[in-house]
Image 1 (spheres, rainbow, N blue to C red):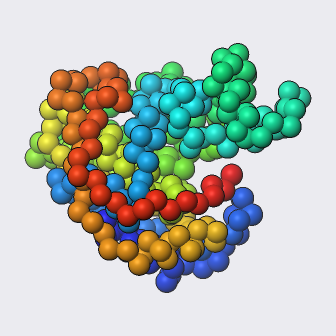
Image 2 (image 1 turned 45 degrees about the vertical axis):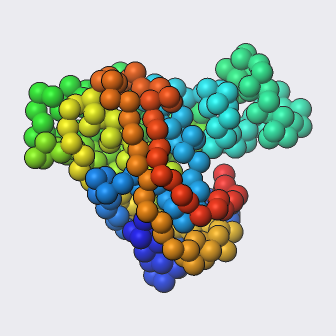
Length: 288
């Protein structure tokens, strides 16, 4: 994953200080691209341990079109908890609960979760129901009928629904490309949290590409990651420098259950990661 370390170096050497919505402060650059050959191993970061369980459960949650955090909470996936909690704190039902207490209520009380655990029409909703269009099904069908199509695109950026989303899409549009019987994917990400978010995004869209390739009977190509505002939060600088001091290790191998031929039938148990030997995890606070 030398590509990722080069990305961090680029931000540190070329970036400038920039204020942001969260008031944390960032070192920011605009416009960057990384490429990963998916035949060279699964691009899961090795300079720190990445919580693959969260990556897989979140991706399956997107694919199902879900927007409530309860399915994630029930699987001990925490990555979305802060956003609906911030909304809950502004509601008349808020009784001073901590984040942990709020998550416990989401887990144990379905009615509470239905009322206070939804993120609005975020990624999964747009993937599966963009103003009535199931974009995932549409591109799968189009890829079979016309593999040379330049329209194999899924767009999460729905301007008229942005105001109803807990967080507007950061990884907002992706396009599949088929050539020589190989499937590649390019993601455009408008806002890229280099330390916390980007390693998840690389793994998630690489995995999605593998899943789509399998159900379409295609070989693997590349994952191309294109970013707009690529930034390191100032409270992540120490962790970033620690990563840059570490030597990348060989990439692991991701194995998919070969019996799954329908994108919407994948389960958590259908994924097996082999030979993952990362450096120790590095923690960082998410900016909401």
